[in-house]
Image 1 (cartoon, rainbow, N blue to C red):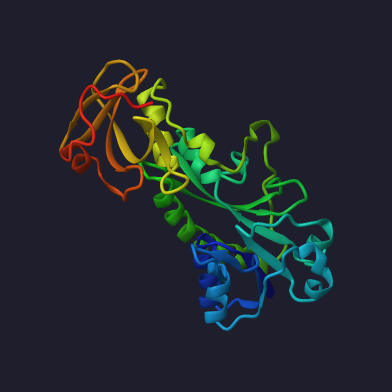
Image 2 (cartoon, rainbow, N blue to C red):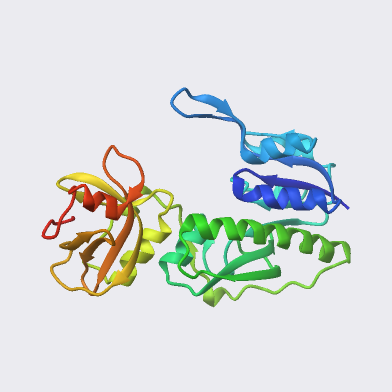
Length: 303
């Protein structure tokens, strides 16, 4: 069975490597075009393109894959996608007689869309996972081939993303086994249970200490490492990277204590202990060190 693999960020690299290691015949890799990175705007390939070239695989970095149907129409039997970053048209889907199969980072039908990992954390989900589903024109709506689950726990977005990336690699190789075996049975998604999520922006990373402490902590974890949850300290942005719920009460946003343990801030209900942060114009540091440097103290107000 010949396959085309389509993906772009680091999240998709383990799946590509796992398929290659398993001996799957990958005839081409699709990815996003090179982009300028850093202050010097150095043109840089996607992590998937870099990995594919290391593996000696042909790479196509089309700006719009829908404009290149002729080039991909006879390449392979199926396509596996993982965080590719482009909408696939009917003409693209029709290029693969065995279907296009997507590795989606949620337990569908929950969290269809662009931010499934962060959305699961924000919603307080106990479990999330990887769903392998057949790609249809409506985003993340296709029949489910298989599901692999993991606990959300107290992980940050970055930590959970790393675990799901490895889980996607397992799911990819398992899915190929099912597809090689013949026409697979698919579980139809329950439309009554569908939820959607959009791309997260910095505007949605503002901390509202008037919320419950649990909700504040979930926001902080969901935004770490990006776009990073933040509040204002004396009018300057203060990025908060990690925190946990602790005992305490007071006016929302009031600093209740600031010592080697961290910075305790009152919320609408309960309080949070901030343990890691990035001050304005500074670098990542322990909140205890920030407090020890007298950059913040009990009685201060965070907005």
